[in-house]
Length: 231
Image (cartoon, rainbow, N blue to C red; front, side, top):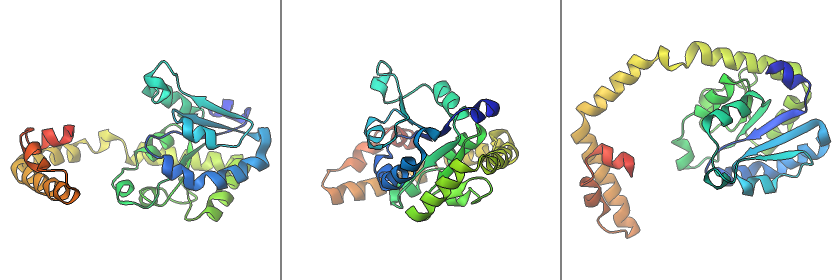
């Protein structure tokens, strides 16, 4: 896959659900860089028409089958194949409570498939080593300069991709941590009644403030944490 990449335009990818607002913050800066590149780059967008329409690039592609969930989702094997042919993956997240609760899974997926991330410090700043296993931007000036570097310096891009892949290989495989995960599940099960009560109290207080009625009591009848997970 890496040899094939070298004979093609630099491939930039945006592939995430529920990040339209996050993308809007980087769209002007992204378009500024794309205006300089012409056919040197191709921008791929998975399943997000609104985002695809914001990109000003003569060489852009929407990757989504309208016959498969109206083009809003692609099968995972398709997503993974796209990642393997991606040079740069954009991972913007605004600093809001909802985003802070996310994991760094997108970075792991990208790194494991050879795509270099240009990411926000929210979430990704805890695991991406800036300039070593990816790039972190703190403002749009950094976003522009680091995106330019990644586009123009293929050797740097490939070096980062190799270091990121090795980081995942030696540190983030589930086979290396499955006992910790199992112990965590066992702890959750042992504390099920306590955690369920806390969750119901929290949700109930929130819904009361929002005027949504006694949703906490309703959730209590869904079977504990399993019911809350479904909600």
